[in-house]
Length: 113
Figure 1 (cartoon, rainbow, N blue to C red):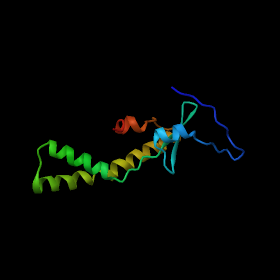
Figure 2: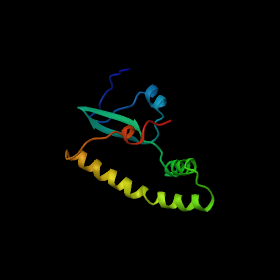
Figure 3: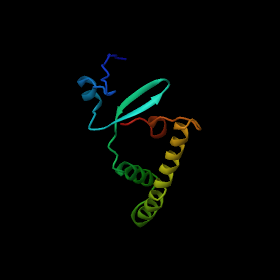
Figure 4: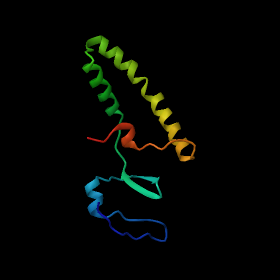
């Protein structure tokens, strides 16, 4: 673990040290998470939705689907993504309000590769 003390401006702004900024691949946005009396700041992942499609296709192909059957199953599975995300967002809202369990991104999706 590496530590660095940083300054907080009068407007409550901080500067992420360049070494950390580059090492973690920050872009124009950061995610700020309140957890266990700490603030975690991490880069926002660029998620275009294509990752879900790739995972769905890989899983269906691994199950042996191909051709028209693969396309049909893919469409069925893809329709399940939005309701699942909406359910996760509701659970996140409940956790933020102290009414539910807190889950990390990695706990839900697994670590990024």
